[in-house]
Image (cartoon, rainbow, N blue to C red; front, side, top):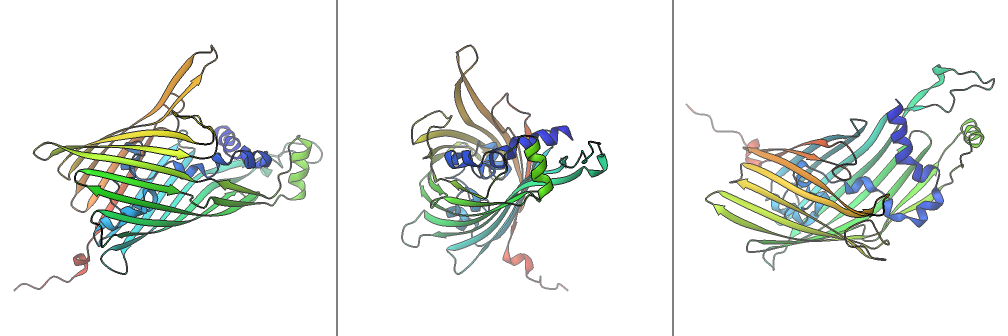
Length: 370
């Protein structure tokens, strides 16, 4: 119970007790949408903007959706962070629409901490402790993504797409917000090279927070020296991701694919490898070793940062990722071992995901045999 309470305070303090700070630090808005989806992408250090080729493109790059080649696809993922306190889930489905060049998808993302103890009514008016008044609530973030991708009929290898996303966040009965945003992406294949461009929150994503605290809760917060939060607007500024990757054929059916991504942010100096004001650049990379389209081994590096420790010495940190995948007919099973910061901040998390391809002929009746 104590761990969940501490984690809840860490996650929500930025908006429950510091609404003024939100306007000054929009870079920290909707950070749950930066974690990634699918064990393949996480195993590659979130370096997938150029090479994603399935239903997860609704998140990574909607331009990739047409690569499903007129198939229905379903993807599911589950992972846990902070020793199982926080749950992270993802589900998506894609299907062909309009014509042979267009594919659409719907994605759902949830990051939440459940069963958080509410101790605001623990002590009654006479100063007595009553544990029966301790209740539980959930702090969770939800995202709903509707994406469409299309292959160019005039330029071979060119694809483009867009995503409309709706974000809902709530902290029990105390606060909730609704947000809306747009993403856009492009992919281009040239021989064994793949290039990608992803623009997240191109018009900025706005979350309108509404706080609904009853009089008794307000009184407790004031008595304990806390500020009563006010309704506010939280803004996520645009991010631009440039990506390039290349396939290398090693021996017979063995090969390697390597991809580099560069995240450009425009919200002031960040703690990343290339710092600037207002533009900062975060590089990350992934390598996938594969045998045919059957077995995959993945490595990724992200969150490369440097900081000054207590002794005034510059220290470099980075987040390693590894993963494996296997294909069994029309099913892809993937696993990744990843972190949320760097190799020393927190426990590594296990990520499992499943993808299924559904062909039209699966539903056709087979002819009877004599």
